[in-house]
Length: 235
Image (cartoon, rainbow, N blue to C red; front, side, top):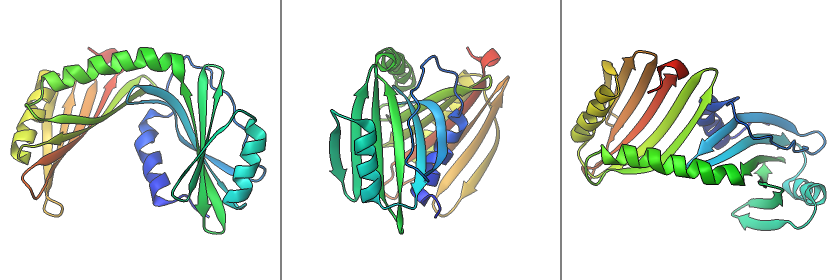
């Protein structure tokens, strides 16, 4: 039994943030007997919420795994159902634990997420400041869909997803200008026909970035921007 494509995608996005240095002391969450755990990036901050995420696979059915977590986590316990998934939630001191379980072949799979509630308040204020800085420099109408950031082994990461009502050419110009302002130079550019897109590779002193510009059929565009800066090179 292997992780689904969706689980692997989550792991790929979270991988650069693995083992992030964070002051939060996360509680150890026990897995059901025989379950196989796997990392989904350690500690990260997603849209202002510091959290730790891990996944697991089990040969037991989802019904059996849900029953095990109900008994293991104790009460009070919040339970919700989203499609085929069961989501269990419980406050543990200053942290909030969520376990999502769903069927997978003859067994089941799950995600365990812990959120640091006090740190979330401070982190969200910093996140709002960072988002405002990005939006103030982008063309009118361009929206920041999501921002994920973290740090690992002396490097700082930002992963942004942007929506733009403008043509991809304008989005490309806007992103290139911002990168130049932040000390990056365009090294090379790769164009693709299907789907129509441009991938820009930037590099600067102790920093690098990749921007994928997607052209939509209605004339709008999307941008996925991944930035890596070594701590010594942060401004």
